[in-house]
Length: 227
Image (cartoon, rainbow, N blue to C red; front, side, top):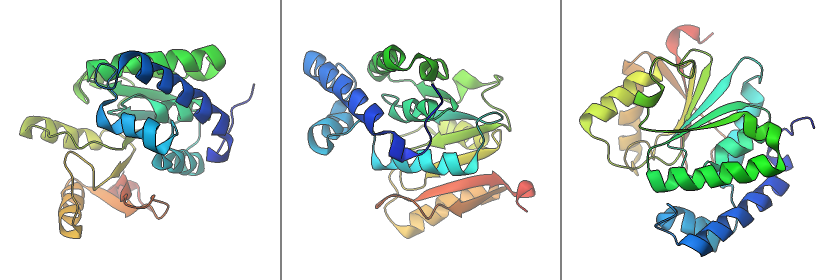
């Protein structure tokens, strides 16, 4: 079956993954399954597996990057809904998660994807461990990689934050929400300070106009490859 492109083709996948998430939440409970408040609210209040920014990112990646030569890494993948959607759309994807409860549940979500769409599941690799250490010196961290961060507001140590910042230059493109990268940055001044840190590393930060309400996604690229 050929891959489906664009977020408009994700409705059936969304419903299928949502039913899987409901079953896991009801059988295990929010905290043991790694849902915590975030995914619990996604199920009980939003009623979808894919978030609005998942869909926006699928459309953005689809418009910008080819499937043959580019691979995707989602750092802090949670339950892996975005990698599922990207793999369904034909991309080769790695989802990295260090929280063991979430990793185990992401494995169940990946298994559900494999039952219905085995070819898509083969394009998605779930990796347990701390980013970027777990991917150091692997083919996942090269100029062909598109690195994506979404909702990453866990407090990082200074050492981890420094290693994460250094890892950005390893990849050809980085997409992230400057409001939710490492900590919550709710003011324009805080977000601009982070953008300045990216620029000091030789990266150009371009705002993504399609960002969903309340999100501030940017596309980072090494300065020398900008036309």
